[in-house]
Image 1 (tube, rainbow, N blue to C red):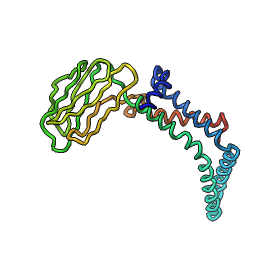
Image 2: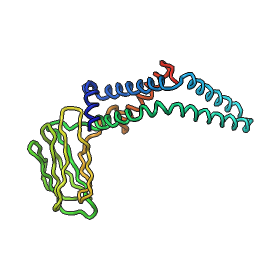
Image 3: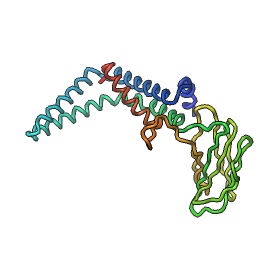
Image 4: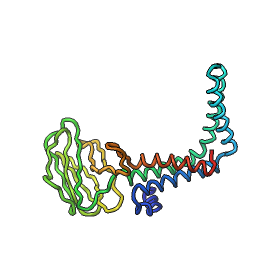
Length: 249
């Protein structure tokens, strides 16, 4: 995709950094972009007043526990103020929506999985339709090696092969009865990979490269934080700090 190649050029320096640092830098850049656009596309005096009024209403509501009627009236006014605040916040959201979606797509295609290194063992899986049986074959190009037999028995609707190969993009061919499906695999020293899955409407329903999930930050014994979780918590922190420093409401 053109936007992916463009962002690869723009963010090329980040790809030389450790993954955690690269994601933190991206979270900071996106956060400051959103804050700047919000600051200069909204009436900050009005936004501050609305926010202060909302806080004041919420404070009064807590103090009126013994007066439900008055509390309900203030609650209604608070909801109206919230709606007005959200309406004014809509403009920067619309402006930043598409750029952020593109950046997120690029990050997903760059940081979700570990790349396959030259001569590193990995596996591919073919998933078949119901009642599929018998054997399936895998044909690999020069530079790729199948570890074990190229012919695999279909078990529980699946067949899996272990592979390794030289650096480069390789086109694999999966054969089942009279059908042939192709799927590309990228082997590289860089932080890059090709989409792990290919879906079809034939007997071979799905082909999947079994990439390892990229662990950005280990948390606890079982939980591991990938790129999205790391991005979310860091962007929340950056946004809170930047809003206070730049007085954006």
